[in-house]
Length: 217
Image (cartoon, rainbow, N blue to C red; front, side):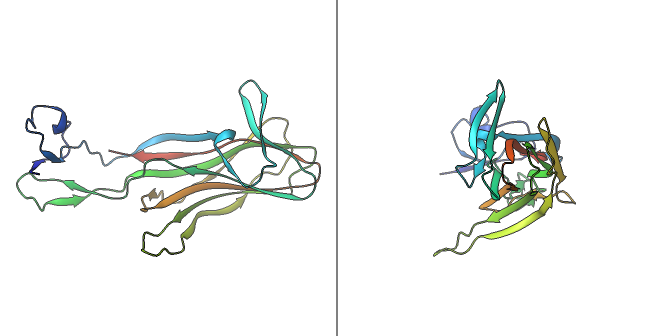
């Protein structure tokens, strides 16, 4: 199939207009931007969170109030996570010059860069024994025959409030500094909470999320 070359950075897609009347496979023609947006919010409610125990029960506490609930029957540890299943950029080059086919320049880092991450929860009756929040990534291998995934703490597990609260509390931690765009091929980013409960204590986890910079252009 023949190839048609169109410079990047123009607001045009040759596949859908008369610049490409013969249906050639396009190179370039994409709208590109180096500067990220800085106002992204990703937040997932209780029904979308991963958990390692059936003891955390999805419960409708009231209108608009859903959470993972537990009353502890002893010393209990629960792991709950949000994984970012957003589209990530893994690196490409700008098609920069119509006349020099080899003139392709590396694009700036793009995708998602987490600026802070958080959990919304409350505990009652007895204070939590411990509670931590962590931001990490796991990169899986594409090597034939398989290989162990590589896990990296982007922000190590850090203690958050264990206090009883009548209402949901919002606890957040700063993301990596400097801000890092996540672009590992086969990489999975997660926000993980680890909560240790004391006997008879109650727990309600409503949501986990993050704020981020993003650039998909």
